[in-house]
Image (cartoon, rainbow, N blue to C red; front, top):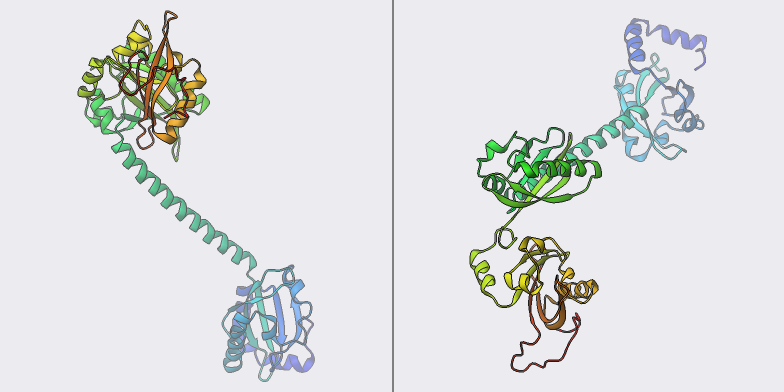
Length: 403
């Protein structure tokens, strides 16, 4: 802003007693822009102390009303600022927004002072764009932190609920020390120990010596590959066979390992088998097999063991049923695909391939046993020469389109 004329100097001299207050005000606002405004609120002169975007937007302000340079929603603030300075000679700071040719409104905080009795107004402003941007980033960051916090709380709540009601024993293992950092009640029952005694102990401690090396390798593989792996192992006391699955689990501060165990009954190789069901299947002359969703055998009764000419029951569990049932693996895959849609299928004819090479023509009935997220299939297999009333002895191949 150019130096004032001689008569204006005289007017400014009348404000000499307020020099300290004016100095403090000017220092406190560290202005980026100063406007000389007449009594009608029209801008007479502009002095710029800042750069973009203030410089670009103020190029054509001279001769315009101060209130016309701001957005409609902040025009009232300009009117209040001018009213304050007209009444008292000094206004408090008010923040307004100027529309900018660059696209975004520019926030500026203004204060005004009258330069002597009847003199013009000096309106000085500070560009608040940086402060406003910081405030917006702070608000966004705070909102994001709150969202993440509540998402984490909800996730932790769901995890704890599912963790405790899971019927399978589950352990959360520290990936570095391999010590148990959390466990559910099913795990405590499996190991025959109070829950608090499991926490802090090495996860391989309850296992039989013969199984520890394999499970340690399982942990190492899960950490290296970042995916689920499993193997069978033996628990020390009470001795029982289990299938262990290890999955990497990301926590907020580190990587843990989720260790899930499924008990394997020494007779039927089926987790938590119902004793009456086991007894019934043991007495059944028909071969009965239960598989998981991939067709791996979870349970097989003595009749199937005999039909498939398998030497030991343990040799069938974990193997693919297509190793014994169906002329080809594709036949069983087609049947299981159909079972997911139809849920039940009856009177299908195929063959069982015995371990000794013998082929036996059999009739198969199948049912989908899926529950919640656990998919399973049940198969009843009987020699095809068993003919019942109303049936023919024709040789239908294992075809999922026949129900």
